[in-house]
Image 1 (tube, rainbow, N blue to C red):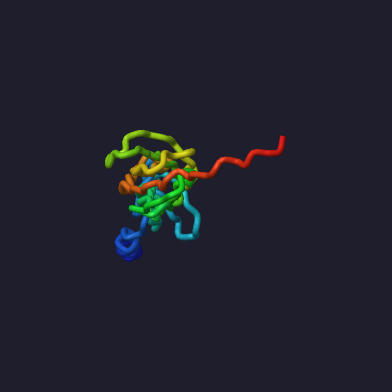
Image 2: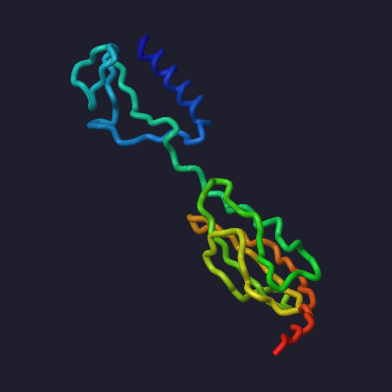
Length: 180
């Protein structure tokens, strides 16, 4: 009777915990693969030779299954300059938002190319910040750029290709001559 009740209780526990995020896993138990519960709270490994009213239970670990799957890094977004922006400074920085839903560390590959809608010039690899200084850009030039995010597990997310156009170079008058 007791064994029947314990068996039904074990089946109920196993069914209810099967939906836990970590699932149910079993691990190796000592000799015989069963744990003996003497009913007084003590346990011993292996099978006992007597047939005392002890319950033999499989060793089960709840919620210790495979780790959660790795999610892809967030899609790079919110570019600055904005996609399609015109008359941008030749000395501006590129910036974007990124990150990872799992909290993993993320690096970024920055691609930037003039007059090419599919930028394939890697200007910074494994960049850790979400801002990049491309240096002084050419005047009146359309630039295309793309960010590819990579998390610490190697999962990657390629952002869209964005573009902007730089403005004219400043035409400053010459310095006034000084008195000799």
